[in-house]
Image 1 (spheres, rainbow, N blue to C red):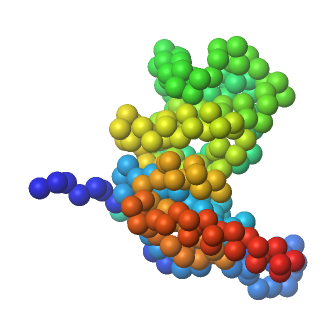
Image 2: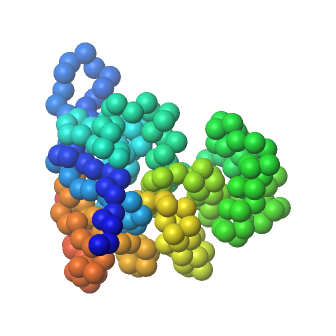
Length: 258
């Protein structure tokens, strides 16, 4: 009998709201950003998360990395409730690569090595990790001494992705990782992401507006709109034309409201 995949992440009726104005002595109503989100992520899944602007996609990734806490509901990592896992321990397993690639004043070499130094890896192992992922992502050696100001936006995004991959996390959260990359690099990065489970047992959740990228990448697609999970489908169930039309209509409706 074929072994059933392990549930790695589980969300139960997760909602998230933010106060409209935090700088006041008066209690104001909260603005709902995510509402009653429930889904499961199996080990090795490649989840694409899409939806119109303002749907709550990036906030969902923030909850999964504990940059924010749910207003209601629960999140589990391998059957452990998130709030019971120390944040540092959680972030060693669940890595978020955000939209804004920043090197924080470090050179490329320093930025890539820093998270491994924090984990007390031996120097030789750090160098081996850097060499491996630089080769995988086609990052040339002459970038190592460069600072943020000496890299293009696309180059910084590639380095930012490498910084997450060198840690080799259990779960990789990506927020629009291909938005500033050319077509050839995007295609190659997609291929790397598709191989992560086979090579490193990594699960990936990626927010992406580019449905062509999602189609090449995902084993499952989550579609969010106005903070709600409207669709949760496996790749074989998805009608990509319908998703594209729904996305266009939702964006048009949002524009009309303004």
